[in-house]
Length: 161
Image (cartoon, rainbow, N blue to C red; front, side):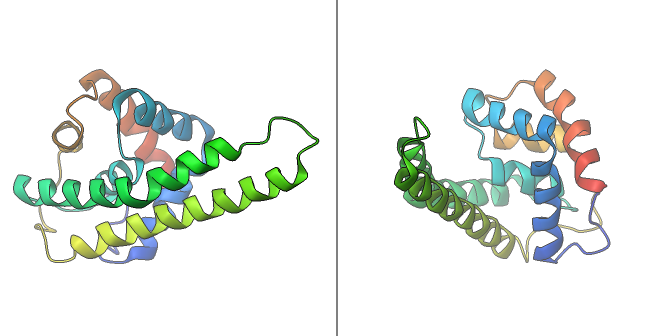
C-alpha cells in the first residue's frame, strides 16, 4: 500500500491525494469518474490510500457520512464556483470571487478528507492487504471494472512517487 509506513497519519493521506491531483492524467481520470460515474473524488482517493482492510458495513457507513458532507457543503460550494467562472478578461471582480470560491472548495475537500480519516481511525485490519478493485466496486457500483482496472495503476503509481 502506498503509505503503509504511516497508516494513521492524515498528512500522508493528504500528501498522497495532492500528488495524484498534481498529475494531469490522474486528475482528468478522477474528474471523468466524478462527472460520468458520480464518484466522490475524496472518497476514491481515501479508498486507494487506506492501507488495510475495512469491512463492507464500515465502508457503507463511511460512504453515507461522505455523501452527507458532499451534499451539505462541497457540492454547494462547487456549484457556486462554477456559476462564478469568469466568461472573459473584463470581469476582474468575478475572477477574484471565483478564485476565493475555488480556495473554499479545496478547504471543503480537505475537511471531507479529514472527516473520512477520523471516521476510519479505529476501523479495519491494518494487516489485511486490500483488494482495490473490489473496494472501488463496492463504493462506486456505477464505475466499470475496466475503468477501475485502468485507473488503479495510474492513480496509485502517481500517489506513491
